[in-house]
Length: 113
Length: 118
Image (cartoon, rainbow over all chains, first blue to last red; front, side):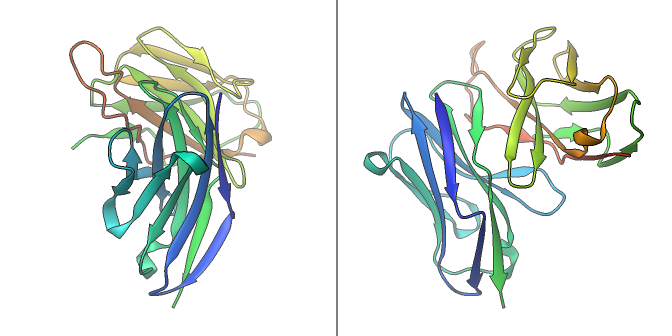
């Protein structure tokens, strides 16, 4: 069975500050891991994904995430927050080669000017 | 440019009405999904389909049915809408990577339909 836990349903950061959104997963098999972003009244857009290989994954808009198997984590970071980063962020896990995704409950990011 | 489209962005229906939500993808994907999204609950899977005329229940299928008559189209049906079905509905698709193709391991999402049942 697979599941995802996102710590913190709401995160606020100042513009220019570090963004850290936390994601922990449970999976009985090697996982694929994803971060999606959702802007108001829109669908989900892929930020980045980990499937195999390098554990530090770089995505769009300056975001990156590191797969840490020992900690079962896949935290999302960005060195310097921008106002346009304000959105809802979802972490998701799927089984390698599988088609079903399991989503966390989401983290709403607010960027304070 | 890959695309998943949904028939309506906003929909208002009355209790008891039959509601159809349509989703079309142009990527020749085998797998299609319907989720509902509610504050604090994230995305919950209603139904998915891995082939034409095939369907599988997700985590919350009660009150919903689906139809997949063509590969590119996946419809969600609310037989008798109720107020607790007011929600954002998201459609997604993914390639299975079969038939010589290669899955991108990514679900592509439509823009969503915000349904209000009065």
